[in-house]
Length: 67
Ligand SMILES: [Cu+2]
Image 1 (spheres, protein in one colour):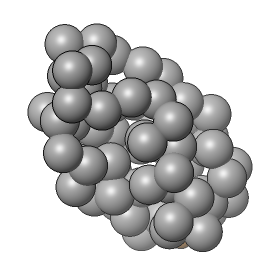
Image 2 (cartoon, rainbow, N blue to C red):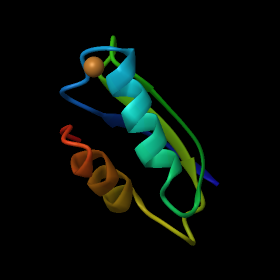
Image 3 (spheres, helix red, strand yellow):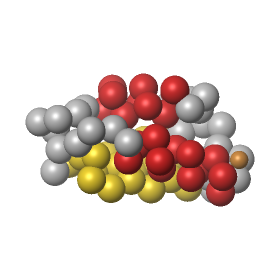
């Protein structure tokens, strides 16, 4: 497992960070994720054999945030 911290722009409240968390957790291979609007960051733990940082960022962008 690898853990990465991503810069995420556009999260304004707990609802936003919840959306980012859910989007990350929905990616196949992600075992845990958290996001924090106050620090504009998200953290994800993932299996590098199943996914990668680019896919995690794409999942965030899909929710209309910038990563
Ligand atoms: Cu919000």
